[in-house]
Amino acid sequence: MRKMDANRKDMLTRNPGGVRLGGLDLLRVVSALMIFLFHSSIHIKCNYGLLNPFIKMGACFMTGFFMLSGFIMFYVYAETDITELRHIVGFYKKRVVHILPTYYVVAVLFNIFIGQESISRNLLLAPVEALGIQSMFSSLFSISHNGGTWFVSCIIFCYLLFPFLQNCVKQMERKFKAILLIVCEGILLYAPIVVLLWKLASIYTNPFFRILEFLAGILLASLVTEMEKSKILKLIFLNKGAIAIEFSAMIISITFLYEKNIFRDNYMMYSWICMPIFSAMLVALAVTKWEKVEESKVVHYFSNLSYCFFLSQFFVWKIINRLQIESNVLKMCFSLLVCIIISIVLHEWVEKPCGKLLMKKRIAI
Image 1: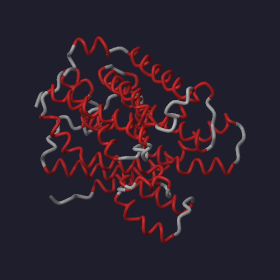
Image 2 (image 1 turned 60 degrees about the horizontal axis):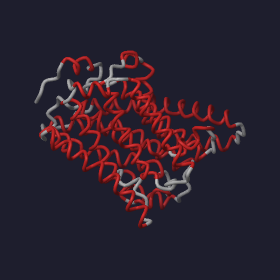
Image 3 (image 1 turned 45 degrees about the vertical axis):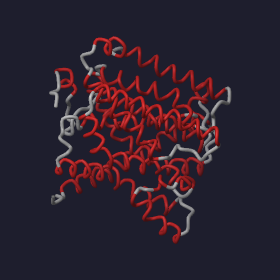
């Protein structure tokens, strides 16, 4: 295994698992916010003016989330021999601690205070939701809280496969990694065309395609670490202006297609725009130094808060709708504030305490 060069050593921070890249933290925060704005336009009818068409297609940022997750996971475990049983067990334990306690708490609270399914139906669904396999049943999307927790289900599948994927990618030659990346993205661009032409069920919540996005992120991260000293890579991507251009191109392109009523009902068709841009942004954010962002405790905290921020939205829309707020600006601001407050409560009172408690318990190997 290649040793980290000076550039990667500079990226090491307090994160005990590996590295923290400030630019990627920022992208996680922006993506979480975009998903929130997208949901607010659906559930409480917020209007964002000129950005409204772009925000109404904010579901595309889920592709960015899965690619980002794979990208970061590779960096975090790049120097770990994840073929060893103790490392595999440690990896799974950390993922379980991070994902499941908050997910279970939110699911229970949703079913008690918001859900409309009967007790018997909830009990029948409980094993599916407890195991996180609801994304395997695409028709469950509209039932109970699965319109949101499909994401949790898909990320569970991604994490289950990560040790195998990471180990395989580490042993590949650079050329084969590039070919596999092209194949993954090719499948992801081809699949929505099939859905469109044959009017098939949406693949938006399909774990297979989300795993491919996750794998694409892993492959990108691996290629970046091998090409860090490449002059071409630095010439093209080592520029913060390039990131602004890429994001602007995404906004303009999506807005244009939305205004022309093209593919509005097929979020995954927008992967033709978003996937290349997300790929470029991940590379640019990884190879560009973001000293102020990396030192910012606020960015770090909100990045760590993103999972709870996503799950908190189940309760936000119900609260705002009950308050019957008419002002568009007030709805936007108050819904965001409520979501932040709930996510902080979940993070500080559920995620962190459960994490500390469960991490103390040893698992015999």
